[in-house]
Image (tube, rainbow, N blue to C red; front, side, top):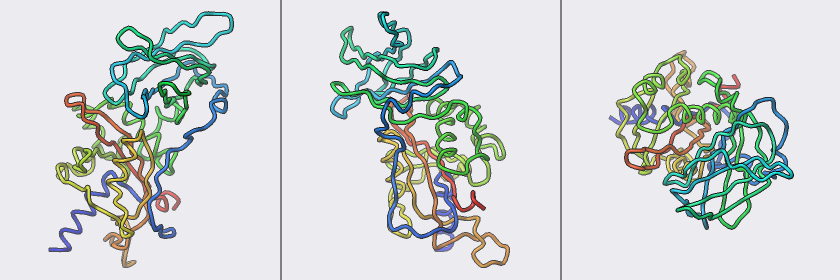
Amino acid sequence: MLKHIRSIIVIALASGLMWNCGGERVTQSRVENEQIGRPLSKLAAAHHKAQAIVMVNLHRDGAPISGATIALARSIAGQAPDYQWSGMTDDNGQAWVEITSGNGYYQARASQDGSEIGSWSSIPINAGYKIILNLPIGGKAQIKDSYSLELEKQITARDVVDKKTLKAFVEAAKEYAKSYPFSEESETEFRQEGGRWKHESIYLSVLKSDGVIVFHAANPALEGQNLINHEDPNGVKYVQELIAVAAEGSGFVEYYFDNPAVDENGDGELVGDPIGSPKISYAIPITDPQTGMALTLLSGFYPQAADG
C-alpha cells in the first residue's frame, strides 16, 4: 500500500515540478528572480529587431491597480511624446504593451477614469526583447526582468538545460496559451510527447493557489489532486513556494524530489530515487479569465541530467 502511494506521489510531482540527479544536498530551497533592481541604463543595448513586448505591473504601495490604461511613447528630444502604444491592466495590475519601434528610451503614463494617475520617464526598451516593467505610483520605473523574444519563440522542451532556457520555455508557453483554461488545440500540443512543449521529463503543469493540480501535461489522471503540503526530504514545502513566487511575478525554486529516471540499484531498471535528487522549477502567474483566478504555470528540470 505504501509503495503504491509513493508511486502516485512520484508521478504526480514529476509532472511539472522537474529535477535532477546528483549534486550536493541543500538544506533549504532557494527562491530568486533574476535582474531585479538591475540599473535601467544597463538594459539599453542595441539590437537589430524592430519590436518589443512590455509586460507592465502597475501598483500603489504594493497593491495592484486594475482597469488602468498604460501608454508608452518614444522619448525624442525636441518632440512632444506620442503615446501610441497602450494596454489595459487586468485584476492583477498587469498589462501587455507591444511596441513597434526601435531601441531607445521611452516614457510611460497611467490613467484611470480619464485622469492621469502616474507617469515615468527614462525607460530603456530594446527591440527584440520582452521587458517586465514595474510602475509604482509615486515611485521610479524599474526593469524587473528581460529576455530575448527570439529565444522565446524558438525554445522547445528539448532545449531546456539550464535556468535561462527553462525560464524562456515557461514564458513562451504562457505567451502561446495566453490564459487558462487552455484552448483545445493548445492543450493537445502541451500533452504531445516529442513536440515543442513536452520531452521526457520536461513538461508543463498548472496549480491553483490552494495547491490543486488543474492541468498536468504528462498525466491527466492527477488533475484534481491537492499537493499543497508536500515537502522534500529537507522539509521544503516546494509547492507552496512555487505558488508564492508566481504570485510575486515569477521565480525559481530549488528543492529535492524523487527522480523517476534514476537507476537506484544499478541493475538497469529505472525505479526512482527515494532519497531525492535536486530539481529546479520556474513558476509564473497565469489567469483564468472566466473566474479571474490567478493560477501558477510551471515546469522544471534535473540539472545533473541536463549536464550528463
